[in-house]
Image (cartoon, rainbow over all chains, first blue to last red; front, side):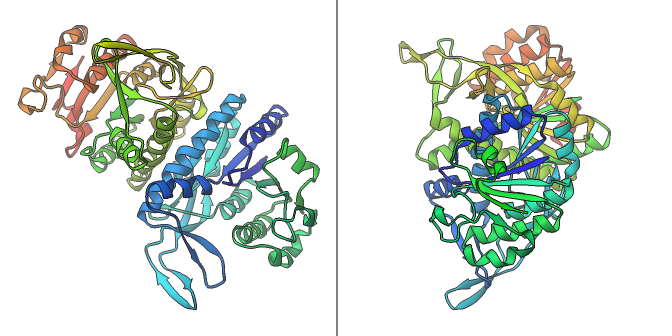
Length: 267
Length: 267
């Protein structure tokens, strides 16, 4: 079983990814796809007159401020526009995909953070209307049911809180919990860079191999979303992952090349 | 097995509907829900600066003009915003719902109408960029798989064309095809009226019983969307339906009251 995670960036080439998924499926591999939709979300939020707001935790991790309007826009773009476009594209490549959000069938359950501290300049502020939380529980029976019946699950946030509220959640962390629940050994994360770079934007600074036990040493090379990816990676290995591939989602044969080691391999 | 169809109107009370569905599920009934989202779609289309356009066929049936932008807005509202809000609400009532569009798992397949004649005043015009079609094939295995594993499918358009394009489709017709494929005997359609009315808006003109063999005589009482409901009803009976309940989606216990005959029963 391979878990493939694709970022929400604009330059991610969905056709190339679908082509490779079809190849894996034809080889008898079980594949789960998890995707983001951040760029589409931000564009639609802008059009709707409610631009995405970001908050930063006291430890410097940034995330989206998710009030009621932001949840509506989230639902429109993640399980709506982007999920269904990916599902239709996979169908056009002969892959029988089914789109699911974390809400469906209680696929992703988590605990809502009812109070969050945020940094505003030098000050720290408490906010209580943020609809976010971390995934703690996976409905692995549903995933196995679909996989065993030859469907490819295409999964995205939001998740469901313990009180059945709709909550935004970190994809990389949710993937790590899926790794544990489904005993996944290989995960591929595709984004808009050739892998983990020592210098942001400098593809020649690609780090080819990372020791999974030394992940903490690599936080110095990350910023913004990449910090979260690294936190997710740590948790995925804690949950039993064997190999994690960070690779380029913009190129032809992105998955095959990732598995060949053209990006960063963490193991 | 009961198929419940709920309209996309603003006054439809989702809480009341979910309460009744929970009662049916606890009685061991298998339930499938199909929903619309027309009002939400129109509101978001307006906000996005691309208001919904309507076309009218030479025989007087009106439908939505669905170009590429309209499909995007459709994906945002039907399988996105509205479907997930319904799924989360059902979850909060203890019903393990899964949202699916017609695209997912090739649930609803249809033939795209590549050319459509439309009336524009006294003239008739041919348009070729309309992404619509009629559902002809249902993935009934997927529905049965979910029902047999205690999930409640919450289904909405769009559908997938034979060429795997995303197409807008008539919900009532798709329900009729589902009736045939799943051998459904009872269907309840909930909307913003107490049933089929002789006079539009006059609840005292409710028609209590309709003979399924005389449906053609009732077209004189319908306009706009109700015409399509009647066409869908005719097809549903042709596909083997035994009872069709048209009833009020705004009231407490809408499903229980429908089954008791408080709306219109067609049989």
